[in-house]
Image (cartoon, rainbow, N blue to C red; front, side, top):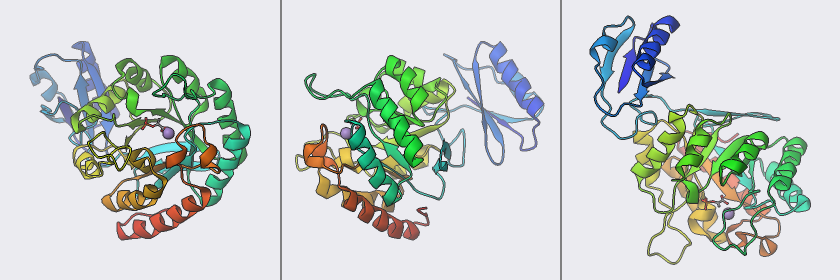
Length: 342
Ligand code: PEP
Ligand code: MN
């Protein structure tokens, strides 16, 4: 259920409606928009008696939301959400006219490696630095990430290069630490339906980057996002990273058609990860071009200065020169789709 307020409704009127909703044992989520505020209601198992709400001052109407997701829906908020990420070098926005490029290694391997890649990422003009300190690996014998020492290295990258940090939390414990160090908390594909982790991310004070599960439908993806918003964190960025199919010429099949589908249903920004989406270095640039052309709000891409020696995902990591080329080509395509690349 959504309560739509008049465009000139006062803060007191919005608060009074929220108080009434809460007094019914439900949760109120005021969603300010440029034209009007809507108040999402969650926590109800059945129909809500809308009569008393509709009669309140400042209320235009109550609309039942038929979709399973509410707060992520465009019904709740017509205009695009812009996630604002404060970094030492200024604010990075994801979801506005300017595209955002997040680049860095799959994993933080050691200090020298992280600094070497970060220098290239900075030089190429990418906006945020990615790198996992906690790695969810298929094999328990593969490199699992450095843990907190890895986060400390990321903090050094942040300090030295002024780049905001995007790094993954794999469970509630690591999320506590990631929240302290990161500018954006990544929830990986394997955890897209780890509901306790989603709830914890929804209580976090930092923006979240939620990757699509490798077999998740669009509705499942948006419902996972709904978990995070329903806990109060509206700073959410979605990310398409490929799904499992019968195709074996790539690691995953990058489902670029989900971009316009998400955009028609949701106000949330969506990025594309062409690295995990293809698993092949040679496919990263062509799929990056396509992602921007189809309307993605940016890219998250793996880069390594010495990919043959990378401890994870070397085969899909582009080299620094390729990142520079990618930035150049993305800039050209951006203007065709009325976007910019700063
Ligand atoms: C990653 O970004 O390194 C990662 C593990 O991604 P995904 O969760 O999409 O597999
Ligand atoms: Mn990776």
